[in-house]
View 1 (cartoon, rainbow, N blue to C red):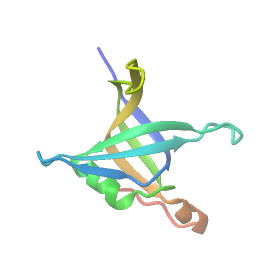
View 2 (cartoon, one colour; view 1 turned 135 degrees about the vertical axis):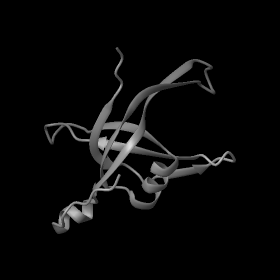
View 3 (cartoon, rainbow, N blue to C red; view 1 turned 60 degrees about the vertical axis):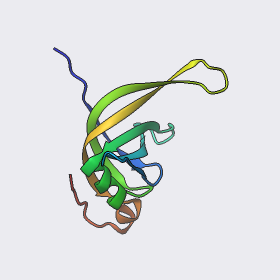
View 4 (cartoon, rainbow, N blue to C red; view 1 turned 60 degrees about the horizontal axis):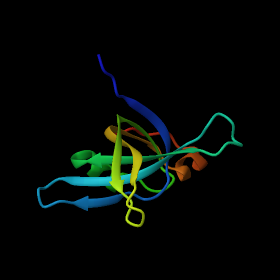
Length: 117
């Protein structure tokens, strides 16, 4: 039996970047900051990839500072470094489900959270 599921709640570190392919596929990339238990600790940062309909939702509704919840799977991307030629690796979360939990401004105003997936 194998299992590869990631669930995270955090804040978008930047506005989503969108890319459209000739095949009709849509890719949206984003970074997510997840705070640790202590406010003194630096957050953990995750690279996220959204595809197709989920990518469009992220592009239209997520902004830097928005609080989101995601579910997906972890993959490791590899490439050759342009200057040294050595192999580099980066973990990426391929998002299957996105929940919009509100923006930083919403929490400051005390408004109710909303969820879309």
